[in-house]
Amino acid sequence: MSWWPWSSSAPAPATAAASVCELPQKIKYNPADPAQNPLNPKGLKPCCACPETKSVRDECFLNNGDAADDKCRDLVAAHKACMAGYGFNV
Image (cartoon, rainbow, N blue to C red; front, top):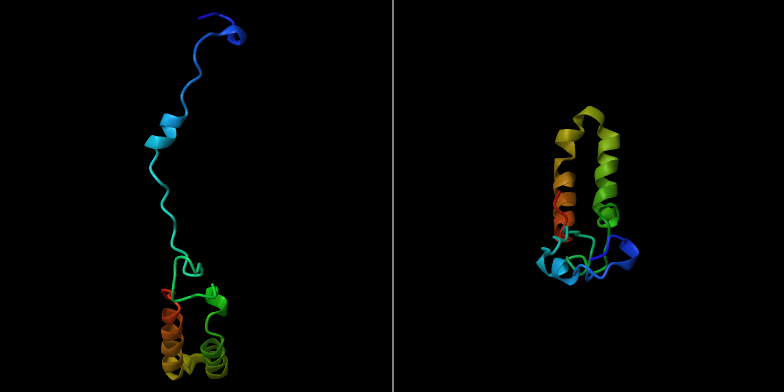
């Protein structure tokens, strides 16, 4: 082995062995990815998944003010059920 780096006769370090020993990276679950979630074949994002139940729920909250928690309970449950139908955990 030479003292000069440009004239080194030492073999290059093996990089292939490092990739063999690495653990595969865990893929984070994405419910909007059709490949990961068969319940959502269109790949809808949570904001766009259930527009009918979302708009009715939101309107109920806007119209009922402080009493919305009690009056809109069924609409919130319906929206949660719709979202769960697409594989979203809410």
